[in-house]
Image 1 (spheres, rainbow, N blue to C red):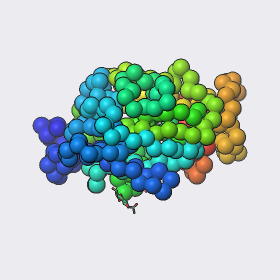
Image 2: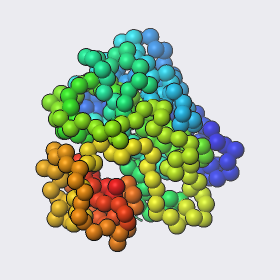
Image 3: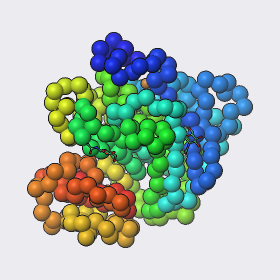
Image 4: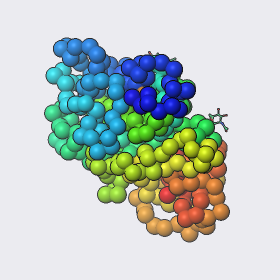
Length: 315
Ligand SMILES: *[C@@H]1O[C@H](CO)[C@@H](O)[C@H](O)[C@H]1NC(C)=O
Ligand SMILES: *[C@@H]1O[C@H](CO)[C@@H](O)[C@H](O)[C@H]1NC(C)=O
Ligand SMILES: [Cu+2]
Protein backbone atom coordinates (compact mmCIF):
# COMPACT_ATOMS: atom_id res chain seq x y z
CA UNK A 1 0.00 0.00 0.00
CA UNK A 2 1.28 3.42 -0.88
CA UNK A 3 4.61 2.28 -2.30
CA UNK A 4 4.26 4.76 -5.10
CA UNK A 5 5.02 7.49 -2.57
CA UNK A 6 8.72 8.24 -2.64
CA UNK A 7 8.87 9.22 1.00
CA UNK A 8 7.43 5.91 2.12
CA UNK A 9 10.34 3.86 0.84
CA UNK A 10 12.59 5.64 3.31
CA UNK A 11 10.44 4.47 6.19
CA UNK A 12 9.15 1.09 5.16
CA UNK A 13 12.10 -1.19 4.78
CA UNK A 14 10.16 -4.41 4.35
CA UNK A 15 7.49 -5.82 2.07
CA UNK A 16 3.95 -4.54 2.18
CA UNK A 17 2.37 -7.69 3.57
CA UNK A 18 4.68 -7.58 6.57
CA UNK A 19 4.08 -3.89 7.05
CA UNK A 20 0.46 -4.17 8.11
CA UNK A 21 -1.55 -6.17 10.61
CA UNK A 22 -3.86 -5.85 13.56
CA UNK A 23 -4.68 -6.94 17.08
CA UNK A 24 -3.88 -10.63 17.55
CA UNK A 25 -4.51 -11.13 21.29
CA UNK A 26 -5.67 -9.44 24.49
CA UNK A 27 -4.63 -9.51 28.14
CA UNK A 28 -7.41 -8.93 30.67
CA UNK A 29 -6.80 -9.22 34.40
CA UNK A 30 -4.01 -11.76 33.96
CA UNK A 31 -5.76 -13.87 31.34
CA UNK A 32 -4.62 -13.96 27.73
CA UNK A 33 -7.44 -14.17 25.20
CA UNK A 34 -6.74 -15.21 21.66
CA UNK A 35 -7.77 -12.80 18.97
CA UNK A 36 -8.39 -13.76 15.36
CA UNK A 37 -5.77 -15.14 12.97
CA UNK A 38 -6.84 -13.85 9.55
CA UNK A 39 -4.50 -16.14 7.62
CA UNK A 40 -5.57 -19.35 9.36
CA UNK A 41 -8.74 -21.23 8.50
CA UNK A 42 -11.75 -19.82 10.33
CA UNK A 43 -12.79 -23.39 11.17
CA UNK A 44 -12.31 -24.00 14.86
CA UNK A 45 -11.04 -20.51 15.68
CA UNK A 46 -12.44 -19.31 18.96
CA UNK A 47 -11.71 -16.10 20.79
CA UNK A 48 -13.17 -12.81 21.96
CA UNK A 49 -12.22 -10.88 18.82
CA UNK A 50 -14.56 -10.39 15.91
CA UNK A 51 -13.13 -12.10 12.78
CA UNK A 52 -11.24 -10.05 10.20
CA UNK A 53 -9.81 -11.07 6.85
CA UNK A 54 -6.49 -9.41 5.99
CA UNK A 55 -3.60 -7.41 7.41
CA UNK A 56 -4.39 -4.62 4.96
CA UNK A 57 -5.49 -1.23 6.24
CA UNK A 58 -8.81 0.44 5.53
CA UNK A 59 -8.19 3.51 3.39
CA UNK A 60 -11.76 4.81 3.12
CA UNK A 61 -13.05 6.34 6.38
CA UNK A 62 -16.59 5.82 5.08
CA UNK A 63 -16.12 2.08 4.57
CA UNK A 64 -18.63 -0.18 6.29
CA UNK A 65 -15.60 -2.18 7.46
CA UNK A 66 -14.44 0.70 9.63
CA UNK A 67 -16.48 -0.53 12.60
CA UNK A 68 -14.77 -3.88 13.18
CA UNK A 69 -12.67 -4.54 10.07
CA UNK A 70 -13.59 -7.02 7.32
CA UNK A 71 -16.09 -8.41 7.92
CA UNK A 72 -16.31 -7.97 11.69
CA UNK A 73 -19.32 -10.21 12.21
CA UNK A 74 -19.36 -12.65 15.14
CA UNK A 75 -17.43 -15.87 14.65
CA UNK A 76 -19.03 -19.32 14.77
CA UNK A 77 -17.34 -19.96 18.13
CA UNK A 78 -17.40 -16.36 19.33
CA UNK A 79 -16.49 -15.77 22.97
CA UNK A 80 -17.07 -12.79 25.25
CA UNK A 81 -14.67 -11.76 28.04
CA UNK A 82 -16.01 -10.54 31.34
CA UNK A 83 -14.27 -7.37 32.52
CA UNK A 84 -14.73 -5.39 35.70
CA UNK A 85 -15.25 -1.68 35.12
CA UNK A 86 -12.08 0.15 36.07
CA UNK A 87 -9.77 -2.64 34.97
CA UNK A 88 -7.18 -2.58 32.22
CA UNK A 89 -7.22 -4.35 28.86
CA UNK A 90 -4.08 -4.74 26.77
CA UNK A 91 -4.27 -5.37 23.04
CA UNK A 92 -1.26 -6.90 21.25
CA UNK A 93 -0.56 -6.16 17.60
CA UNK A 94 1.64 -8.32 15.40
CA UNK A 95 5.31 -7.76 16.16
CA UNK A 96 6.90 -5.38 15.48
CA UNK A 97 4.21 -2.88 14.55
CA UNK A 98 5.80 -0.95 11.68
CA UNK A 99 4.03 2.43 11.69
CA UNK A 100 5.21 4.89 14.36
CA UNK A 101 3.39 8.00 13.03
CA UNK A 102 -0.25 8.33 14.02
CA UNK A 103 -2.75 8.14 16.87
CA UNK A 104 -4.07 5.31 19.03
CA UNK A 105 -7.79 5.28 19.82
CA UNK A 106 -10.11 3.04 21.83
CA UNK A 107 -13.89 2.98 21.66
CA UNK A 108 -16.77 1.16 23.32
CA UNK A 109 -20.10 0.39 21.65
CA UNK A 110 -23.00 -0.80 23.81
CA UNK A 111 -24.90 -3.77 22.37
CA UNK A 112 -28.64 -4.02 22.90
CA UNK A 113 -29.76 -7.11 24.79
CA UNK A 114 -27.73 -9.66 26.70
CA UNK A 115 -24.91 -10.39 24.23
CA UNK A 116 -23.01 -8.75 21.40
CA UNK A 117 -22.89 -12.04 19.50
CA UNK A 118 -24.77 -11.55 16.26
CA UNK A 119 -25.03 -7.79 16.67
CA UNK A 120 -24.12 -5.79 13.56
CA UNK A 121 -21.29 -3.42 14.54
CA UNK A 122 -22.54 -0.83 12.05
CA UNK A 123 -25.71 -0.36 14.13
CA UNK A 124 -23.90 0.58 17.35
CA UNK A 125 -23.26 3.99 18.86
CA UNK A 126 -19.62 4.25 19.91
CA UNK A 127 -17.84 6.44 22.42
CA UNK A 128 -14.13 7.07 22.81
CA UNK A 129 -12.53 6.00 26.09
CA UNK A 130 -8.86 6.50 25.25
CA UNK A 131 -6.77 8.37 22.72
CA UNK A 132 -3.16 9.30 22.17
CA UNK A 133 -2.08 11.52 19.31
CA UNK A 134 1.11 13.54 18.96
CA UNK A 135 2.79 13.07 22.34
CA UNK A 136 5.72 15.42 21.84
CA UNK A 137 7.82 16.95 19.11
CA UNK A 138 6.47 17.98 15.73
CA UNK A 139 3.98 16.38 13.36
CA UNK A 140 6.81 15.46 11.00
CA UNK A 141 9.38 14.23 13.49
CA UNK A 142 7.54 13.74 16.76
CA UNK A 143 6.66 10.93 19.09
CA UNK A 144 3.16 9.57 18.50
CA UNK A 145 0.74 7.26 20.27
CA UNK A 146 1.55 4.55 17.76
CA UNK A 147 5.28 5.01 18.40
CA UNK A 148 4.59 4.52 22.07
CA UNK A 149 2.55 1.42 21.20
CA UNK A 150 5.60 0.02 19.38
CA UNK A 151 7.83 0.88 22.34
CA UNK A 152 5.39 -0.98 24.59
CA UNK A 153 6.00 -4.36 22.93
CA UNK A 154 3.56 -3.42 20.14
CA UNK A 155 0.73 -3.28 22.66
CA UNK A 156 -1.68 -0.73 24.04
CA UNK A 157 -3.37 -0.77 27.42
CA UNK A 158 -6.72 0.94 27.93
CA UNK A 159 -8.53 1.20 31.24
CA UNK A 160 -12.28 0.68 31.10
CA UNK A 161 -13.59 3.75 32.94
CA UNK A 162 -15.16 2.82 36.28
CA UNK A 163 -18.06 5.13 35.40
CA UNK A 164 -19.15 3.13 32.33
CA UNK A 165 -22.51 1.41 32.85
CA UNK A 166 -22.43 -2.39 33.04
CA UNK A 167 -23.44 -4.24 29.91
CA UNK A 168 -22.29 -5.99 26.76
CA UNK A 169 -19.98 -3.96 24.59
CA UNK A 170 -17.80 -4.18 21.55
CA UNK A 171 -14.36 -2.86 22.43
CA UNK A 172 -12.72 -1.29 19.42
CA UNK A 173 -8.96 -0.72 19.41
CA UNK A 174 -7.69 1.35 16.50
CA UNK A 175 -4.33 2.53 15.28
CA UNK A 176 -4.10 5.03 12.43
CA UNK A 177 -0.95 5.29 10.31
CA UNK A 178 -0.14 8.66 8.74
CA UNK A 179 3.03 7.81 6.80
CA UNK A 180 1.13 7.94 3.51
CA UNK A 181 -2.08 9.43 2.14
CA UNK A 182 -4.82 8.39 2.39
CA UNK A 183 -4.34 7.59 6.06
CA UNK A 184 -4.36 3.88 6.98
CA UNK A 185 -6.98 2.81 9.52
CA UNK A 186 -6.58 -0.42 11.45
CA UNK A 187 -9.58 -1.23 13.71
CA UNK A 188 -10.38 -4.53 15.41
CA UNK A 189 -13.13 -5.34 17.91
CA UNK A 190 -13.48 -7.66 20.89
CA UNK A 191 -16.64 -8.69 22.67
CA UNK A 192 -16.66 -7.88 26.39
CA UNK A 193 -19.20 -7.82 29.17
CA UNK A 194 -18.49 -5.01 31.62
CA UNK A 195 -19.55 -5.76 35.18
CA UNK A 196 -19.65 -3.58 38.30
CA UNK A 197 -19.99 -0.47 36.19
CA UNK A 198 -21.04 3.07 37.02
CA UNK A 199 -23.87 5.25 35.85
CA UNK A 200 -22.29 7.87 33.63
CA UNK A 201 -23.78 7.39 30.18
CA UNK A 202 -22.00 8.97 27.23
CA UNK A 203 -23.55 12.22 26.04
CA UNK A 204 -25.07 12.58 22.58
CA UNK A 205 -22.05 14.57 21.44
CA UNK A 206 -19.73 11.75 22.51
CA UNK A 207 -21.59 9.07 20.51
CA UNK A 208 -20.73 8.25 16.90
CA UNK A 209 -21.26 5.53 14.33
CA UNK A 210 -18.69 3.65 12.24
CA UNK A 211 -18.75 4.58 9.46
CA UNK A 212 -19.84 8.13 10.22
CA UNK A 213 -17.37 9.25 12.86
CA UNK A 214 -14.60 10.07 10.40
CA UNK A 215 -14.31 11.78 7.07
CA UNK A 216 -11.40 11.81 4.62
CA UNK A 217 -11.22 15.58 5.12
CA UNK A 218 -10.78 15.39 8.90
CA UNK A 219 -7.63 17.33 9.81
CA UNK A 220 -6.35 14.30 11.70
CA UNK A 221 -6.63 12.07 8.61
CA UNK A 222 -6.01 14.42 5.69
CA UNK A 223 -2.54 15.30 6.90
CA UNK A 224 0.79 15.21 5.08
CA UNK A 225 3.54 14.70 7.64
CA UNK A 226 6.30 15.44 5.10
CA UNK A 227 5.57 19.12 4.43
CA UNK A 228 7.86 21.85 5.74
CA UNK A 229 5.00 23.07 7.91
CA UNK A 230 4.63 19.60 9.46
CA UNK A 231 8.30 19.62 10.48
CA UNK A 232 7.63 22.58 12.80
CA UNK A 233 3.94 22.18 13.71
CA UNK A 234 3.13 20.69 17.10
CA UNK A 235 -0.64 20.65 16.55
CA UNK A 236 -2.48 17.47 15.75
CA UNK A 237 -6.23 16.96 16.07
CA UNK A 238 -7.13 13.36 16.86
CA UNK A 239 -10.10 12.20 14.74
CA UNK A 240 -13.46 11.26 16.24
CA UNK A 241 -15.74 12.63 18.94
CA UNK A 242 -14.75 14.25 22.25
CA UNK A 243 -13.66 11.71 24.83
CA UNK A 244 -16.23 10.02 27.06
CA UNK A 245 -16.38 11.45 30.56
CA UNK A 246 -15.03 14.82 29.55
CA UNK A 247 -17.97 16.65 31.04
CA UNK A 248 -16.35 18.07 34.14
CA UNK A 249 -14.62 21.37 33.52
CA UNK A 250 -12.03 22.49 36.04
CA UNK A 251 -9.57 25.35 36.21
CA UNK A 252 -6.21 24.39 34.70
CA UNK A 253 -4.22 24.55 37.92
CA UNK A 254 -2.04 21.73 39.12
CA UNK A 255 -3.75 21.47 42.51
CA UNK A 256 -7.12 20.96 40.88
CA UNK A 257 -5.73 18.51 38.37
CA UNK A 258 -4.88 16.04 41.11
CA UNK A 259 -8.49 15.78 42.22
CA UNK A 260 -9.50 13.78 39.21
CA UNK A 261 -10.71 10.60 40.86
CA UNK A 262 -13.59 12.26 42.65
CA UNK A 263 -14.44 14.54 39.78
CA UNK A 264 -15.00 11.79 37.25
CA UNK A 265 -18.17 10.67 38.96
CA UNK A 266 -19.77 14.08 38.67
CA UNK A 267 -21.90 14.90 35.71
CA UNK A 268 -21.82 18.65 35.99
CA UNK A 269 -21.37 20.51 32.75
CA UNK A 270 -21.16 23.95 34.26
CA UNK A 271 -18.68 26.18 32.56
CA UNK A 272 -15.40 26.95 34.20
CA UNK A 273 -14.42 30.41 35.29
CA UNK A 274 -10.82 29.51 34.61
CA UNK A 275 -8.74 31.86 32.54
CA UNK A 276 -7.91 30.53 29.11
CA UNK A 277 -5.73 31.55 26.27
CA UNK A 278 -2.22 31.86 27.62
CA UNK A 279 -1.31 28.19 27.35
CA UNK A 280 0.48 26.02 24.86
CA UNK A 281 -1.54 22.80 24.81
CA UNK A 282 -3.67 22.57 21.63
CA UNK A 283 -7.28 21.40 21.40
CA UNK A 284 -7.55 17.71 22.40
CA UNK A 285 -4.00 17.77 23.80
CA UNK A 286 -3.32 16.29 27.23
CA UNK A 287 -3.19 18.83 30.06
CA UNK A 288 -3.44 16.71 33.20
CA UNK A 289 -4.08 13.36 34.79
CA UNK A 290 -2.41 11.01 37.24
CA UNK A 291 1.29 10.76 36.47
CA UNK A 292 1.21 13.48 33.83
CA UNK A 293 4.03 16.02 34.11
CA UNK A 294 3.68 18.05 30.92
CA UNK A 295 2.14 21.42 30.14
CA UNK A 296 -1.27 22.10 31.72
CA UNK A 297 -2.34 25.39 30.15
CA UNK A 298 -4.64 25.17 27.16
CA UNK A 299 -4.49 27.39 24.13
CA UNK A 300 -7.36 29.83 23.78
CA UNK A 301 -10.28 29.19 23.82
CA UNK A 302 -9.89 25.64 25.13
CA UNK A 303 -10.21 24.60 28.74
CA UNK A 304 -8.47 21.76 30.55
CA UNK A 305 -11.18 19.15 31.07
CA UNK A 306 -11.06 15.89 33.00
CA UNK A 307 -11.66 12.75 30.95
CA UNK A 308 -10.80 10.30 33.69
CA UNK A 309 -8.36 9.99 36.58
CA UNK A 310 -5.50 9.42 34.16
CA UNK A 311 -6.31 11.93 31.50
CA UNK A 312 -7.39 15.52 31.12
CA UNK A 313 -7.46 17.29 27.78
CA UNK A 314 -8.02 20.72 26.29
CA UNK A 315 -11.59 21.04 25.00
C1 LIG B 1 9.07 12.32 23.89
O1 LIG B 1 8.53 11.41 24.84
C2 LIG B 1 9.29 10.23 24.97
C3 LIG B 1 8.56 9.31 25.91
O2 LIG B 1 8.08 9.97 27.02
C4 LIG B 1 10.70 10.55 25.46
O3 LIG B 1 11.45 9.37 25.54
C5 LIG B 1 11.34 11.52 24.50
O4 LIG B 1 12.59 11.93 25.01
C6 LIG B 1 10.47 12.74 24.28
N1 LIG B 1 11.07 13.57 23.25
C7 LIG B 1 11.08 14.88 23.35
C8 LIG B 1 11.68 15.60 22.19
O5 LIG B 1 10.66 15.50 24.31
C1 LIG C 1 5.07 -9.03 24.16
O1 LIG C 1 3.94 -9.34 23.37
C2 LIG C 1 3.75 -10.72 23.12
C3 LIG C 1 2.51 -10.84 22.25
O2 LIG C 1 2.70 -10.18 21.03
C4 LIG C 1 3.56 -11.47 24.42
O3 LIG C 1 3.43 -12.84 24.15
C5 LIG C 1 4.73 -11.22 25.31
O4 LIG C 1 4.49 -11.82 26.57
C6 LIG C 1 4.95 -9.73 25.50
N1 LIG C 1 6.15 -9.50 26.28
C7 LIG C 1 6.10 -8.80 27.40
C8 LIG C 1 7.42 -8.63 28.07
O5 LIG C 1 5.09 -8.31 27.85
CU1 LIG D 1 1.21 -1.23 6.88
